Image (cartoon, rainbow, N blue to C red; front, side, top):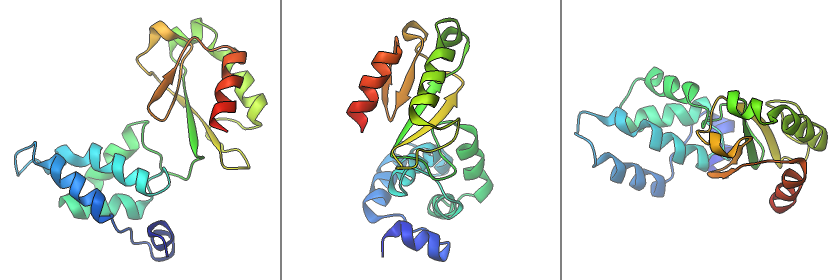
Length: 170
């Protein structure tokens, strides 16, 4: 049984040994009493281990591992847009909806994506490939309109460049 299947069946998430080693290595950068400094990194790794999202069981595992109250982990996971709190597609298309992108045609890009994928915000395509997500800012105003897939940022978007990107991701 996979770790993810175990998490959904039992409500218990087991952080893989390799991930534990990475988190422990990261924690060496901080004073012993500042384990909260490892929450962002630990959540990033655990999210990757859990098919791209953070279940309550996965967040609880991070809290146990770091010796923190659960709420300290939940606060971080629910605040930052890089964390997913429900299952998502293989590729999360995070689209900046801030003013620079709005002024540079973001609305047309969003309209094109919604029509092309047949989904709305926070939905996933039926084949599980794409999830569409609005984000407040990707700090790439010079590339507006812009979207991020994983850690890759794509800017100066047009319907044609979006179609090409979707083809490479499919």
